[in-house]
Image 1 (spheres, rainbow, N blue to C red):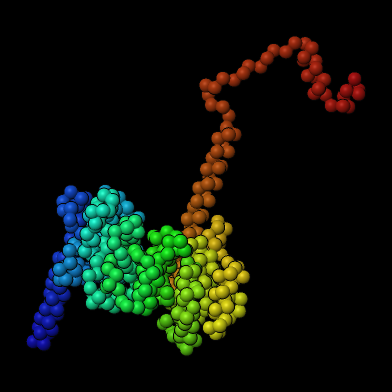
Image 2 (image 1 turned 90 degrees about the horizontal axis):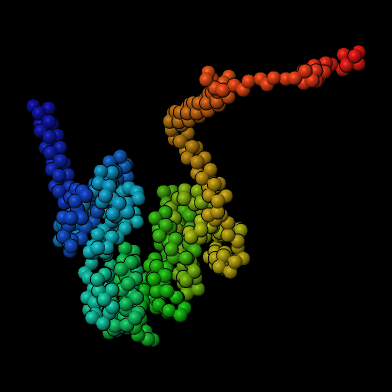
Length: 462
């Protein structure tokens, strides 16, 4: 009787689990090469391109189904789909899929690529940001911009402005009427909406603490303050927005560093072990954050500040083991880095180090030259092999046997091919080839030949 009850409970739990999976996956549509022909022009699609053999794709599946269910429950206009890129290659080529899993959002005729962390919150924020309400363009703007319809959200009230400020860490706001700057702002929003939020507001909507000397203007609100775009000082609007779209201090991972490659800023990092926090690691994080805050006006144009959990990425960059906690400054654009000449213990020492990097007193190391790339590949290979033998010695031994066996087979094949070629060259001419007949020699030539054949003793005797 007890066994029957356990069986019933097990069956009930299993059935409930399967039904929950089926109900969640029902909100994710499997797409194929006919998608382009069947999609309606006004539909917005969030699509995952995957490969059946991809481990990371399988890990993303539960998250992807949750995203589909939640967007549907919220009444979002975003449809969620999946595409087997190995089976439907035409669709994958159209979206320029180069790796798996690839996450794309299609809105109108524009394709937006998501490069952030593969988390539910990150992907949901990306979908919400890009699929937001469309900006109604003024008839005075150029027709070329009318067809793009970039995402710029209007803020009609101070209450809504404060609500947006509380929800987003970084946001850009255009203030003013129609102008050339407005056209540039809308054009940049079309390109960079995948990274940050763009809004527009009237002058009276802004908080009283915001002082604008001239209109129109573009401002970025972050870190509890705001910065204004100055074309003469900051140059191109797109470059300025791209460099200001990060908080002045934040937790940084490899994804974020990749995105920072286009900002032209140096990245000052505290490298700490978050899994084993110590008082010293907390002090290093606090020290970097204080410099980022207190010296914001001095260094924010040139430096990005943050902390990174773990030293694996940094070890591969500098090709040696970096102790934790440590301070390092990265030049993400060329894989260069700066290390302090002495251990940094105080805020004043950190400021001295940052100032030395800024003014060129501390020289850059590393880089992305051919030699550095070769050495880095060798270091990463050595690290990978060491990790394999440390964590899985049997697997390491198996790989060594396979590698040695394959190398031996290759060498044996090359040697046999070389010997075969040598033997072919030494063989007699095959039957049927023309052999030059011996020329007839006269009496005088025979005598000369005979004299040449004699040795010196015989010649002297003669």
